[in-house]
Structures are given as structure tokens and as C-alpha cells.
Amino acid sequence: MKWLMLAIGALLLLSACSTSPDGVELVGAYTDGEVLETDTVTLEFIATDNLDDVLECDVLVDGIVSQSVDTPNGIHTEANVSVAVRLPEYTFQVNCCDDFGGCSSTGILTLFIHDLTPPQVMWDFQ
Image (cartoon, rainbow, N blue to C red; front, side, top):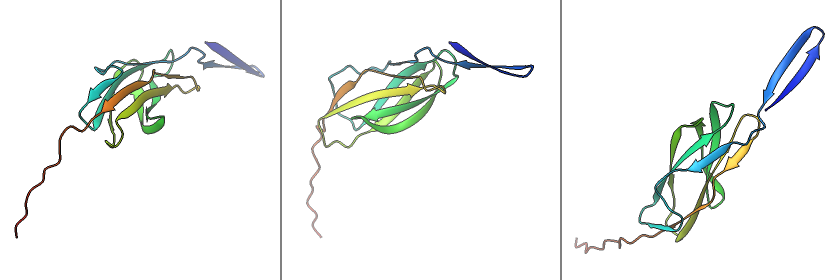
């Protein structure tokens, strides 16, 4: 942590700036390369910082922000992400930043989404 000092006349101002890296890790039950039969993925993560109480986190699907979540420092957080089942493979990542611009990301989690339920077809006699 660095301290910035600014002296104005007899007044001394101190301001704390976080220079320690934030941390964010996925803690959910998914493993990289897992095959799922759902269009909703629940990502579970914990974001930590040395100063901030709340961190601003983005949940990315295929590198695009799907949703933003304010998460308390060090608290288990869940984000439910819906995907359109048109591609067999999706990548997920969580990126969190503190108020001072320090950011950290999880590794990339690759999941395969398969729709194994066939459509229902019925006769309609009217």
C-alpha cells in the first residue's frame, strides 16, 4: 500500500491507494471441459481485496460482459448466466476491480452445453 501525502499550509492530507493485487477465484462445482445439459450456468466465485469492502465484478461469456455484480470482499458470490444453446462450447471468466483500478481475473472456464432433449412433435387435428 502506498500513502499519498499532500501538505496544504498546516493541513496534512493522507490518502490510501491500494497497490496490492486483488484476487478472484472460481469456487463452483464445474470443472474445465465439463459437459452440461442446461442453458443456465451458475458461476460461484470469491473476490478479495486488501482495502475495499465491495468489488465491482464482470461475468464474461466468450469474452463479452454478460452481467455486472457488486460483490462483498471475501464473500462467496453466485452469478446465474443464461446462454443461447446454439454453440457447443462457451468460455466463462470473472473480472473484478477495486475502487483504485486494481483488477484481477479468474482463469478461463470452458464448458460444453448440449441440448440432448429432442423437441416434442404432436398431431393437431382440428
